[in-house]
Image (cartoon, rainbow, N blue to C red):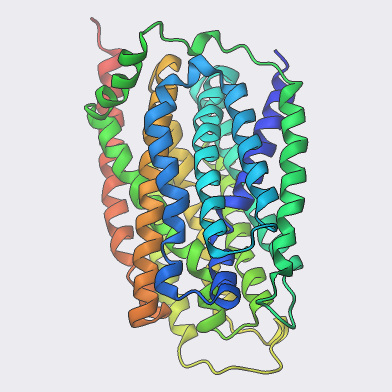
Length: 414
């Protein structure tokens, strides 16, 4: 098994999906300007990505060890590469929906495979948490690159011009290159087999939900992704309509959020070696709430500035996206807590549940925020993120309690 080559292929695969999955905010903005779509209609675009993720993960996660994790990643990359090739040729909002359906289906295959492979490539909980944070950190580097790649293809003089769709030629070429790397990589996947029949493997996901630790984790994951996607998806539109930045700057400024997430996740791998995970995450949630209360008042009563530049951009454009720095450690940390507590043969089923509830959280957050944007304005919509933050704080405390109980039960003499 070529461990280093396989990890590199996993990181690059995750990065390209970071670009595509988090392009929803940019594509929403471009669809509003180029295809004449309303905000309410555009708000459902997230669902075309997240619902296929949830459905495919639910139906196939337990079967993934039989297909093979490496083959599943290759299948996902091939499917999304084909969709990218079609996007500039069939430029329309319905094709945009189809692209995100393909992205969702592909990411379901990829995420279950990548998360399950981490257990095969690491030996202990510390190594598992470190590699999880590293891969998620590079995922956010992909998100960051995506903002700038998409912005580079947008015509600043005519933001609605379909020339921006040429970005998908580049993304298709990147997917093909990573596919070739995976085709020449190898990984020993024998430990992933649980020896169960297909029906038993599928039912294993339901058995996992019955465990209190898993149930509390799933609530935590749902709430976290709800918050992250509500901010990340609508941040370009917030920059354009509330802060009055030009379209290209609105997309580029949203990359500060991705930078914050990337730095936070890469740093979390170091911090979690020294700080108990639950205390770190609780401090992060409180810091997120404080930043909302600090930054959003800076966005009030701003007026359009014809001479807008980075030097004259509102302070809120720089401050509010820093919320990503405190969001960053939460998702990989809670994922690692639950996965490293389970046998490797159950990682695929558990990852299926992670993907399902993350997808549902993402769709819910994006849809609710989009509806609030249309009805009460972007500033007020982001203020309401304080409610799921309070719920997440409670969920993390419960997750710590359940993980402690599970650990003591595992150590007790049988």
